[in-house]
Image (cartoon, rainbow, N blue to C red):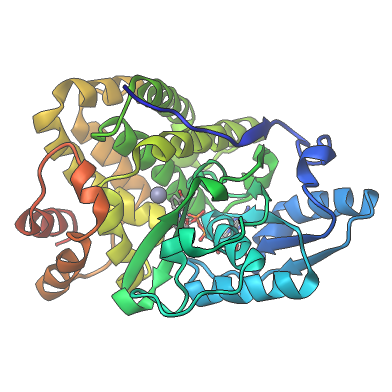
Length: 371
Ligand code: NAP
Ligand code: ZN
């Protein structure tokens, strides 16, 4: 038995925002949630504002979302939304603004509840918030996280010195607008990092204990699309078409992990981001080779299917490509690894990994990947 939930209406294609105004306007007063510059650079903000102006919808912009947003950053966004009396949100940007908008949607509808075990604002017990989060529309400008179609928001938690996700079906976006024009001018390294994140979602979902025939079907299609466009990430020659396809692969990755969750690649990667400021997708990509080798020992048929979908002959071939597009320059110590493993072994997605994982296993994986 399995379930499959994907309530977001996805509208994909050039000019998706301008041509589908009714799906962007989910209320009477909008707050746009975004990072410092990507919404403007990508052209997405202009498209969204043109629609809001055309339909006489009052709006404000919260453009203070940090990379790897904190809970406090989102609580401030919630206060801004309440002050403006926004009744819907439009998230524009990479995974950081799209995730932040989900927490902001909770805080916009409710005063933050203090006194959690985890943090000042108890977003991890989101069921305690009596009013539903505001409805949201998403306009992704990176092709990686798939946040526009997931019920997760991954926030930085200084108290635990890591990142931690909260999730509820109530924070699925109502609509997501997929337009490859917005990712065309991504710096090449950001395009690579984020594409590797999408690849990790597809592989971690496909090999996850919670995978199902439906999520597997989508995962393999996502990997085939990445294979078709991988040269554009290697040589940097991107087109609107290749960007649209990679954005679609990223959304497929989001649909997969919405059903399965991720694995230790992600929970171990959070420490690399928290302590070394390594971007999310790159952090996952550095750990993926070790994961693949271990997954291959318990799921050789599934790893073969991954390689076939990626049009590669061996795990080594995939590792070489990853090493080429994710150059590794950091220096990391044994003491750091021991410390990180203590935190990441407590993550809940350890239990859905296809192989058993102990503290020593995580130390070994970090060592093999990073020393
Ligand atoms: P990001 O942190 O959202 O953005 C990385 C950088 O790229 C930022 O400096 C951003 O600028 C810039 N940028 C974004 N779009 C651009 C564009 N079109 N042109 C030029 N620059 C652009 O990166 P991300 O990898 O997309 O998201 C990572 C976050 O998503 C992490 O917090 C991760 O934990 C989370 N995540 C969530 C899920 C989920 O299911 N919800 C899954 C995986 C990862 P600005 O500062 O101006 O925005
Ligand atoms: Zn990810």
